[in-house]
Image (cartoon, rainbow, N blue to C red; front, side):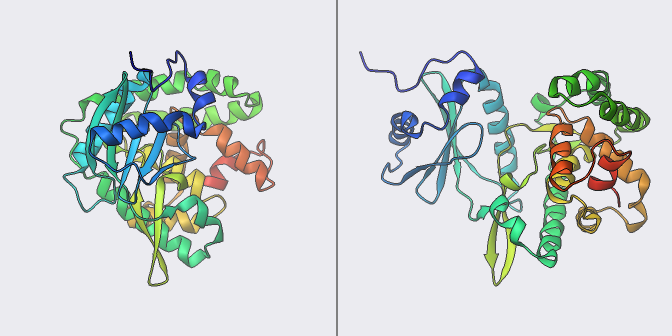
Length: 319
């Protein structure tokens, strides 16, 4: 009887405790390589991400997930298969998929570049604006991808908005957000939720557009987006829902970056005003993974009082 290559886990907490123990996963990654005829000579574990992710040489990546994330893995596989028909997008190509001892995995192409999170803080304003324009074009192209065949990640949008609105206060309480701050944000959210719930257009959403999920390559002295990765939590929904992460992670106290991004995405100059800013703020507050704690942490980092009226809106969304 052969020894098991993978642990038997019952919870995400158990998985998280083992995730960075690199050598624990090597035998399983090597077995996957052998199964698919890949070399095991140049394997390297990534130290970021919520799944077991290994680089196979310079051309491919293996993503391995625990059995209780089987549906998440299936969702990402289906999205990558859909995106394979759109080579204009800088996204990984699906190469193969399978299961090992009940753990689902897939193999995808390795895109060139360095994580934007490593580079962004050192870029000057001109370079940052150029990247925001590229990001606007990239997300516009992503949102044009037909959603036929993506019913598995579609939601009833009005129902989703209503559910998020009803659970907002209790969600922030679980995060430990002060009641005074929650009350301010909830008031703003209530004003915008009805219009957000009446989505006239729905599209494929990445849902976590952040520096860790963007790859940059320096070409002729200019940084270019060469990868948008990690489609582990996709949705079909309102385009505005995508932009909360962009505003929070990239544009604190920099409305010029928000404008460059939104204009490149396709908004008209006349659209860039208080109404759009309030709608984007509300869409961010509705995010299922909770944007408020992240925003409050950033506010404290840059020396702003989170209890100041409208500070969340003004810092991350004003135009």
